[in-house]
Amino acid sequence: GDSVTQTEGQVALSEEDFLTIHCNYSASGYPALFWYVQYPGEGPQFLFRASRDKEKGSSRGFEATYDKGTTSFHLRKASVQESDSAVYYCALGAGGSNAKLTFGKGTKLSVKS
Amino acid sequence: EAAVTQSPRNKVAVTGGKVTLSCNQTNNHNNMYWYRQDTGHGLRLIHYSYGAGSTEKGDIPDGYKASRPSQENFSLILELATPSQTSVYFCASGDASRGPVANSDYTFGSGTRLLVI
Image 1: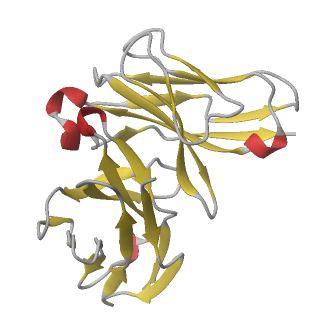
Image 2: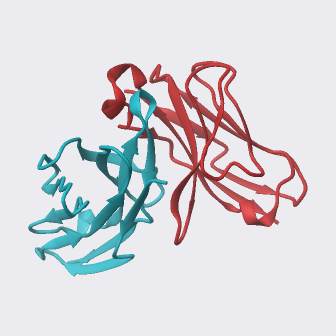
């Protein structure tokens, strides 16, 4: 079945550091790829998506590029802030008009000032 | 603003008891979903629904039932709660009418923290 692998379980950075969270997927067909962010005490929030090869999604300074060749959708940000501390989930959606999301296990980002 | 509201926010249940988690959405979305969130597992799909009267099994449905009596409401039912069902449960809605990709821009509720003792 479909699956999403996030390599890092936790990432600890200082403000203004560069962020990379790795996401690889396995799916039949051509899934859409997503990043969600979850702040403490809240539900996950949609961050952005990409639905075709080489498409770049972005929001709030975060970005990721759909790479069908390497089956990857890595999250990057050039300069993180303390307010970016949260759990980040990579997800894929496949299955036609009623696609369900399959999530990775999440990566907890902690940024210190 | 579109919203998904879950109740209760916290629940303590006794092993073997019945638990009902409720979810209400004001988004007028067709699709609704129940996930559980556990450390080391991320978010896993339990049940989902395409509209009033429909329920479908997700990836981990065992021990759970679901009910969708209306467009707005979607409940998750644990008939015989067990300690392994201690978790944080999230409800989400998605708008299938906007196409498959947009449908996956889920709106999540704030979660229900369930402790089964």
